[in-house]
Length: 143
Figure 1 (spheres, rainbow, N blue to C red):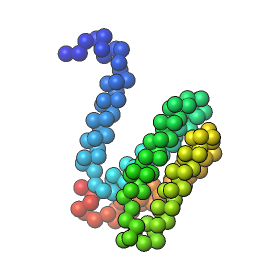
Figure 2: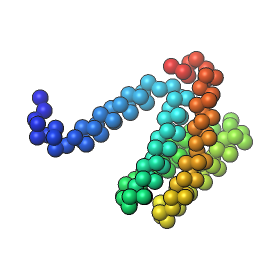
Figure 3: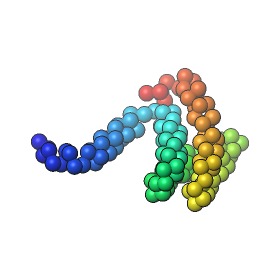
């Protein structure tokens, strides 16, 4: 079915395709609560990758990982906030997300691992709190 040449010379391509299908499957069957958890986890994973790349001098990989973290914050977490209905909490989260996107950008420009660590440290409690409320999510959301 697959030639041995293709399978041995492009294993990363096949692994990437497998991960993409797995991610799409996970997203399509996830509750809204689970989707937000996936965003938190993706963000923290991207920060870890950026820190590793920074330490090993992989500038391009660091930039891609930080860019992914910024997109998760801006296009995933911040874009979903309802500032009118969410009141002060939504505004506080919005302010935090703006700060994180700015801090990540500066950390990227300055190769600032302390900035990356700060961004991880600021998001971790939100992720942990989100996990802790999972049993309080209405049944229709907990598919």
